Image (cartoon, rainbow, N blue to C red; front, top):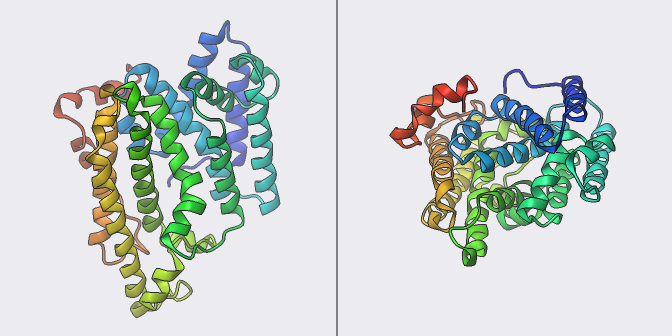
Length: 330
């Protein structure tokens, strides 16, 4: 990913944001300040998510931007910061302590004044207002800790239950609490649909980054699938072995595609004002998943979806919004 922020850039960003939040006149102004910064993070790190989230109602969109920022930072700690393993764990532990502190603080500005990072303070505001179970974010941070000390996963069920639940499913739950169900009695159905979609998205991301993850010492392909295919993750330079690994990748891609279909068939459980965004997310990532299925070398070449294809995932009547969003009018 181009132009990622290093550790110092994140620290400078947070310090500047903290000053602006503390100087805000009231909670509303502080919230707006953090939302603008959260949008900056999202637009820098995820063009796909940025595009599809533009078409949520403003209040829900702002909450989604804050959620994204609050999962992005821990992910950067474990993936991109050039710091030793012990420092990564210390940063995650400090972030966890600040989360607990924010949960005990009554409002956004008080949390920031007490030393809680602004985006984390804003996320806790969303947790309270959307009635999210606080333990979901704890599960997410535990998954991030697993990335600092990677382990292998024996089966797909092991991968999903031990890691994907914390790294992706609970994030899907965050968004579902923000989106809301179509009607009160459908919340459990909406969470179940979110789980299907979150699993599919995470599996697509795994198979998209097999080569990069291996260089980081991580293997997310289940061991039983590798063994049954005779594939060896330590011999990716061997052409015959690479074909066997590609076979495993394509098998997981097929599993993900089935999950995308299941989620797509149940979109009516979500609030109507969020379905365009959820459907666009499915469409964009199914395209990416299909590119991986069609690829003969997605291990060395990171697949992506072209911008025009992302736009085609949106209703035609929505296209005219995009230039306005690009210049900050929406």
